[in-house]
Image (cartoon, rainbow, N blue to C red):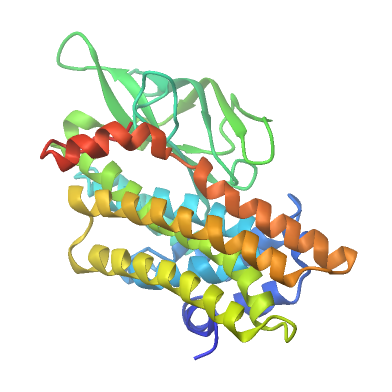
Length: 368
């Protein structure tokens, strides 16, 4: 089987026509913020990739989704990262399984209308866990009002919905509790400002949404933490696949270059496919029983080990390709830079050193 053939065949099966459409467009055009990648993904049914068939989705397995993400990353890293953020939202909402039916309404709307959802929960902030809500809400009899700011990497200007965490006053006494709220992107008072290519801030200025779109942690009987951790395991898997795809685009160029010695091509192939095999093992664990605490720990181990592998593979592939014309050189430089983005996604390895050491000593795994 040729390099990336299995991944691209998975895209052809689940999202017919998408890979061919992406392949026909120059990389730098796809990577432009106004490029057509997101629309191609939306029109191919990509938003419903993880949604169960009962809700008009494609019902992809974790293994399928990983392979799709790698294939997308090899064509357009920015699209793959945006898709991973969307799938993070979907996986988390599916994990909630609320009695109120919010997750059913959400996933069916995503799949039936190809709506894109950003996730505004996972942020690294001083003295706060990455899954701690960053915004506040108040709930009246007929409206919820939200204030604060969050980020929606890669999807802020394309999203139809934002799934985010808030703290809200308890209904049964003093104090605050966490909640999840789904906010339509067109809501009055919601604004977006750029803080760099992947750091678009979404600000809420007393944004009003229906109470039906908010679910309190107290109503979930402990499911919120479970769903967030399950979603976070999915996120580690799918972002790892996305950046592995960007690196694979460089490796593919080296494998197709007759000037590169066979020994070097095999060396690149072995390390890249070894990293993918580790990610596939994680995907199979998720498919076998759903993410639990140990699966989340494994997701972090795999993500950090793949980071290390790519830090070796990418510079070597760039060096071996070498001596390129200006257009190809720009593409190679862009892909190499993109791969570094994996280290920027939460949780950073240095922040997880203590929690992982504690977990190995038989304590509960926390996300720093």
